[in-house]
Amino acid sequence: MLKILTPLLAGALLLAGCAAPASPEPVRTPFPPPPTAAPADSTPSLPVDTREDAHISLRIVDGAESGELVLADPAGGEIYTQTVGDIPVWLDGEQADASALRDGMLAELTFQGNVLETWPARLSGVSAISVHSLGTPENPGGTTYDLCGLYLQVLEDLWEKDVGLNGGIEYVSVDLSDAPGELSAGEKAAVGWIFACRHGVTALGLTYEELREQGYLTQREGDPLPWWENGVLFSITADDWDEGEVYSLPVVKFSASKWRSGLGAYFLGRCKAVWPEMGAWSGYTVGAEAIA
Image 1 (cartoon, rainbow, N blue to C red):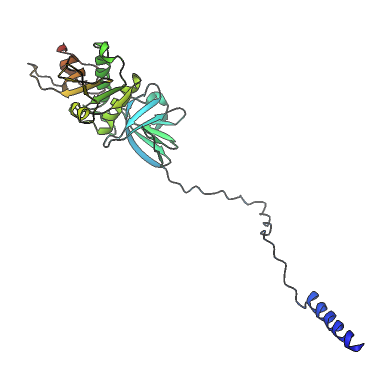
Image 2 (cartoon, rainbow, N blue to C red):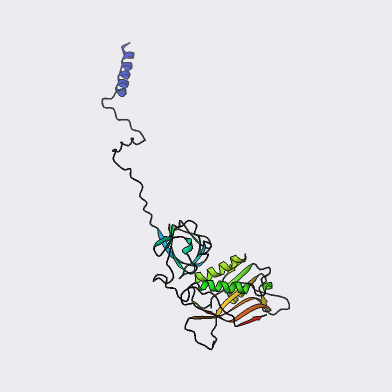
């Protein structure tokens, strides 16, 4: 009998020792303890926004009146679109509104730093648009001021010449590679894109030679000259004819043409625009016209 009770008693004593340790460990919980109450006169701290705004200077090529801006890099090849909407506009350091914007202005846009990969590109989180009045040190003007607007006017006038050339087209290529004014690649691209959008076609920026090299031009049976079956090439090139008189203000001399084939083209020659000294180019005269 003692041989049986002794093991049982030893086991009971062992269990009793595990169930009641002399110094129990504290119970741990996965949740942090509740915060202590803040003093009545303390102000709760807010998260600190460490993000820094980015800034970019772009030329307003078109859309100042409507608020649907098309902007171009004045030194590079990028173009952007931006709806003004409720974005604050600053003129000469004072808050204004969208009516202060003019085509040709150089605008500084404040944004979050990201550029959306669209064509044209878009800036993320634009929070301000800052411009300066024409004639201020920051915006002294110059002979290239809104030259894009002048070229858009010339292209529209050409579109209305011999409108049969425009029938059934899917593309327009605007070649400003030899246009006077030293526009940036972005400004040239913006002019072509705006013009194409106005007429519901796709924009290209190719010269005649590039159109041939890339297979846009074809040969028709019985016609030795190439033609563009579904597009029209618009070109503006610098001209240097003797006008017989001297102007005190800068003058832009150029020729302009639309071409679809050797027997389908229109030409404006001896064109002249006089800069109004302060402001945008407003018009031009045509010295000769020809049709093929």
